[in-house]
Image (cartoon, helix red, strand yellow):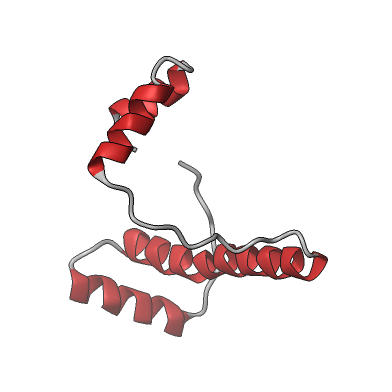
Amino acid sequence: MKQLLLRIDDDLHQRITRRAQRTGRSINATAGEILARGVSDEVLDARAELRARARRLGVLADPLPSAPVTEAERERALSSSKGLGSILDTLWAEGR
């Protein structure tokens, strides 16, 4: 785990401290959670930007609607692909 030395103003430190006390958590855990939430939007934004760019370029296809698969159809598909590769076998065994 990495460490981060961060200089913040006194007011911000007090607010983080109060939140940590209210939630019964450490200041470090509270600050880490706040930082993680703050940058999680960037991942979503980057993903949305990539999808928008792909759509503009005409290379993004929306998934086609499909009918629900019956249990018998699912089992038949699993049986027909069993042994095709260890990765598929593992995924099937895990029910994915």
